[in-house]
Length: 504
Image (cartoon, rainbow, N blue to C red; front, side, top):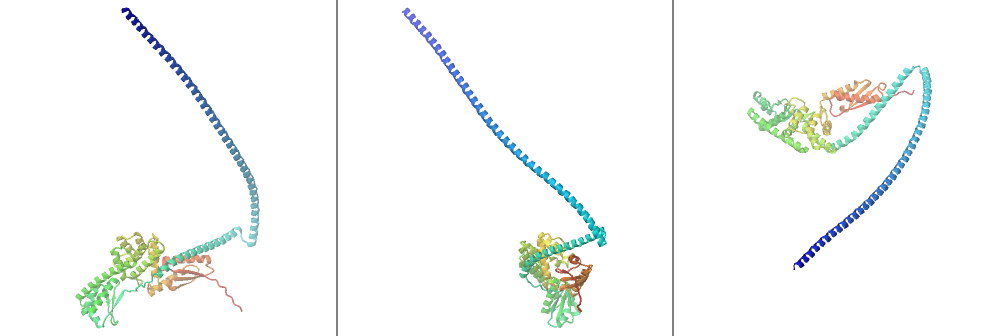
């Protein structure tokens, strides 16, 4: 039994050793197989890498060859273009050389011609001096004088033509606008003076107005600030005052006292106060009515009141309120035709003479007073400029102020709009003729058409056609500087040459 166990144990030990030997041999074979596969894979990778490198080198060489061909083609094209341009430049240089030779030949020909002309000029000058008996300097001065006269005549003619053309164009447009405005407007202006007449029921009323020892008339004049003129005129008493508002208060109060019949100092003061309140109310109503009629909005109440006071103020016999409304309508129409702001135009026109109602209480011209009151009450700068510039005291800052000035001139120069004292009229015509007659070469001067035109007759030998145009302009500018007149004055210079003979 023991032997058997030993045999078995020996067999088991030999089997284990053989298994271990077989495992080791298998592992070694497996490693050798793996190493062979790895070497084969590495060799394949090397081969593939070599192939890839070869393909990249071939592609790069091919691309390089293509780039070289493209470069050579571009270089050849540029060489051809350069050669063509060189040929063009060479041809141009050849042409310029030929032209230079031609110019040089022409220059020599011109120089020879100039020499010939100079010699001919010397010969002609010598001949002219011999024939005319004038030296070269004298002939030159005579020629310059003739050229100067011709240039002056041509310049005067050109200036006259340009002025006439501008005047025709301007007159055409201006007449169109003014005609349209005037056709739509023809109000009548009320002519007033510094006196008002009051009708009496009988001459016996004059004594009651005067009162015992003149106490009634003194009380009335003290309360109203007017002068009451009682003369031999039947059934009429005259109320005189330079302030039209006070004159209106006096007229109204006197009419009511006459109608009431109770005339004494106490009653006089009561009636005068009521008349004053009524006139103030009528002033406001007149201002509001004027603003409403002209379509002006948002005017300050104080300015409205001043506009109403213009109802009792006149200038050259023309009622200022009616005149201002007329100017406002004209200016509004013209502004509309010119596509400008008609509201500002009417506003500036209605207020352009507002300063005239303040001249009794304040110092300064009506323009200065109008500008001050308009500025004080916040009027638009264009409206203020319309007031300031309508007599050209300041520069016009907008077309609207020019329109207001033109409308003012149209309203003032309308026939019958203004009255002028006979003495003033005669004095103005005399000054007009004197101003035009002060120029050299003037023979006679005639003021015609009520001073709207002056005709100047000149001596033909002293004033030629060119100087006639200059003379008319000089006379017009002198009249503008030294004479005051309404509207405009036309200056006509007449130059006439007459040849008279008799057939016997």
